[in-house]
Image 1 (cartoon, helix red, strand yellow):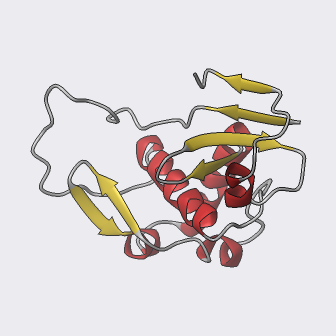
Image 2 (cartoon, rainbow, N blue to C red):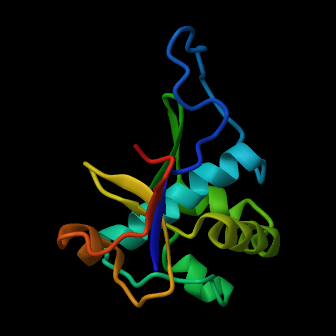
Length: 141
């Protein structure tokens, strides 16, 4: 079974009326920042066409996907720098909890969605192929 749904977004996502002037942001293990990291990790996994995962089994496995930039409004920081400043075990547990709840994120320039499946798929290959029988598009449209 394959199930697609919307990507969970931080509480500040999409605020268009009054963007605050953000000169710096202290990235942390907050729920909002974890959603940001979750998307960056899976954007990196999608770019490399890695397989769907049920969870990260180790810090080493997780750290293969820790690169690129994290953004908070117009402020950005190197993801590795942020990751190195955080408690890695807590980070791993929180990311695995997000994976358990939402599945994996498929993220390209033109498509972003959460996917839950019990089928062996590779993230980018899946979205590039004609989408097979998808059982539900929960709240996606």
